Image (cartoon, rainbow, N blue to C red):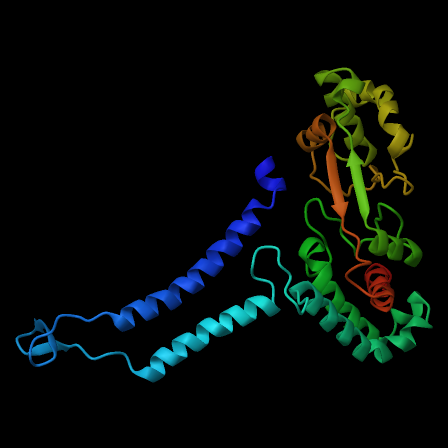
Length: 299
C-alpha cells in the first residue's frame, strides 16, 4: 500500500518528463557537433538505385532554432500549468475549474429564460410548450441513459409514464428524488423465510397478488410467510412510498416477471441507485425537469 500513499510516483513522473526534455536538447547539441565521415564530394558514400547519393549537409539553422524554441516553450508551460507530477502550476489552472467556469457562464446566460418558470407551479409549467421543450432536452441529457429516450424505462429502471411510483409521483416527491437521489435496497430474504420451498411458495403468492398465472396451492402456503415481506411491501402487497417498496399488485415488474425472477430477488436481494442531480443541475433546471417528468404521466 505504501506505493499508493507515498509521493514516489509523482516524483518519478516529474523526473521522467524533465529528463526527456533535457535529453532532446542534449541530443541536438551533440548531433550538431558530430562530424560524419564523407568522401570528397560531400556525400556519405551511401548510394541507392544506382545514382541516388546521400549528402552530408547540416540541419538548417532555422530548424535547430525552432527545436530549441519548442524545448523552452515546454519548460515554460510546465512552470505555468500542471504537468510535473502533482505540481499545480503557477496559474492554478485545472480542467475541472475550466469546466465549472464554463457551466456557470452558460447558466448565467440562460437564467432569464428560466426565471419566468420559477414563479409557476409545476402543473402550470407542464402546460408551457417552451418549458417542455427545455425539459425534454434536460431529460435527454441527464435521464434517458437509464429511463430510455421515451421514458418507459428499462429492466431495473422505472417507467416514468405509467403513474407507478416507488417514492410517490407528486411534483414535490419528484423534485426530492432529483435533488437528493434515491438508494433502493431489497435485502436477501431467503433465510428469514425458512428455505428454498418457502421461497417458491412466497414467489407464487406474490404472483397471485397481481392476478398473474400462479400455483394456488403454493400461493396459499406462501401467504403466511409473506408477513416477513409485509414490513416493507405492506400487508396487502401494495408497497410503501416511505421506503420505496414496489407495489406487488399492479402487475408491473421492475426487475423481471415470473417465479424465477421473484425467487432470484428473494434469494439475492437488489440494490438500485438513482444519483442525485443537485450538483449537475441548477434549481431552475430541476424545477423545469420536475414539471416535465410529472407531465409524462399526467397528460
